[in-house]
Length: 146
Image (cartoon, rainbow, N blue to C red; front, top):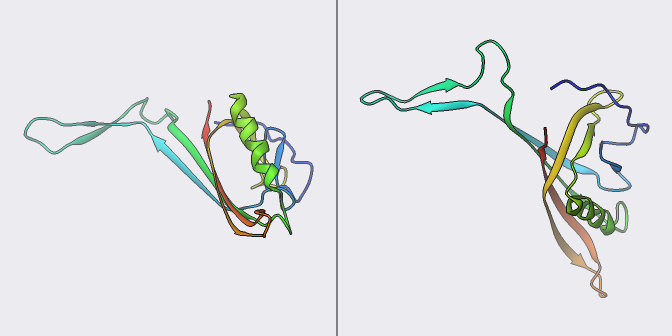
């Protein structure tokens, strides 16, 4: 999948999902995992060991069967980011619309196409007396839309 580059506009931006920017002042990921599956089908002939068959044209990319990203980090509301940034991402996911993902692994950002938010998880800890957390761990699972 090849897409045209799209500028991130700011050097401090780690990535952009739709109109949400991941940066130090919002949500700064500490870890990004990418998992890509490929189209192989297991064949089990009688009396022989299993073999695998590639689905697609040999020598040409059939494309991944799935492409997933997990973005994880820690938010410290008193120093960087706010809890409402996670709410904003939840609201974006609830709309049910794929979002363009721009990833800053090049100088102008790599356009990874349209992605959907599958899951957002947060863990709050180290609370102030009024119940406001000083530490919020978060993770978000994205999947390539197509």
